[in-house]
Image (cartoon, one colour):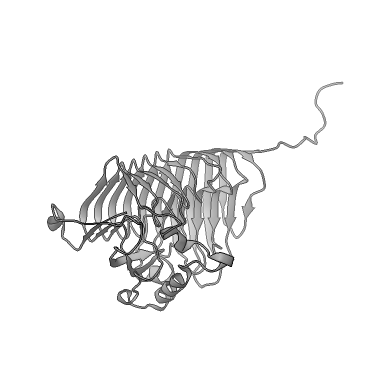
Length: 379
């Protein structure tokens, strides 16, 4: 494992500045300093990401090589695994403590984790930075999320190959960031391929920065919980997401386009456009909107609106849509145009939903039933 740490320099100072490089051959956390970071939508002081940039401009991670995080069930990943007899994973107590700190407004400087705790760091994290290029690299065996820009702007992720199946190994998670381009990438992950986020619960609302203006194109999504996902840490809102010319296909891919939130996280999720996407087999649905994600207790009613799905095809899925909310949420203005969905196995799941429209849409069942009409022609 290698740590690349670039912190607190101006753009001019960063050019040609020395960079700290730490090698930890055993894949452990013992060499990682504690830095200002975000963990599943909550700010804290925690283990540094393996490549970490704080308040910088003009950053590039490029080349044709492989970035190997060294994670396995012998080190990082075991922190998220249950113990013998179903005992809590080592990280559970730390997760609860961080959530309580975020909800009660403990200052970030006092949310200190790191050595002796079990919150895994992401692989690459630019924080409060801009003009970022990540291109050409292959990423394997990450401790946690792979590429996680936070509160950053003008980000390009191009030609990146991510192949890692550890717990919570999301591919690319722009969080409270804007003007993001993700193109020509391959995602084969243990979790969401792309997950757009903007902070969690009270801490996300405290920071209050949306993710916006995000383009995902010409990319391939294989194994994962979703091809393009919005949420669930989405309390700061998201708007203007464009997905086009992608291929999503794997027996281990659960959904193509997924929204997830609940009454604690809330958030306005709007202006999402998917077009010219080929979907093979998905395990749940082509479109999932789940606003009961881990429960409905809380005062914040999520909003999902203005979702356009055009020229999308699929070959096999239990259903086209799984859309569930609770009384008072807004799920509205969802449209399908020029789409063909084949091999559909069951009825759609829809509740607490506003308008859905269809124009030139074909849904073909996996098994065609026998016609009950009278036979045609003469005997």
